Image 1 (cartoon, rainbow, N blue to C red):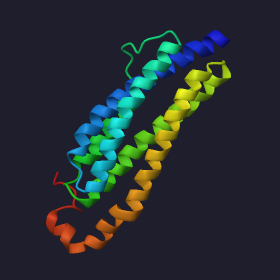
Image 2: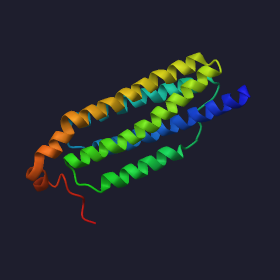
Image 3: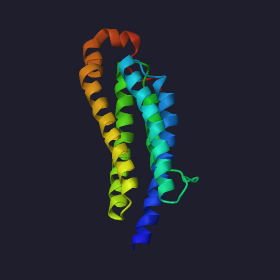
Length: 178
């Protein structure tokens, strides 16, 4: 039974590795479409953090005697496709920034669930070092999610709600023409 859990943990780590790699590539594309400098800065910092997380997931895999392999995280692929579709619906501006935050937070919530589960599994089978690595990444993901929420509430919503006609003139609150 423990061997099956170990195999499942390795599979989950490979899935997380793929998810983080896909997420990093997507985030770099999305950053170019963001208007708010605060959001651009937060997302850029998160890309750098994610690159560190990828290295630590590799370390966790090594601890388990495994390598990342070619596994593709289909859940992340779907989240990214959905995010891209939503982002493409809006012109650059404050509303698009909120759409980006919503899409990124969906991805963050998936990652939080993934890291939470794998950290618990690792600790349950005595892989304390792996559990610690994953627990640290889990906390980083939670902090990113919190920062995105705070930024939306303190800055982005004010830009949308306070912008009124100025946003409409810039096209920032309109959907793209179909």
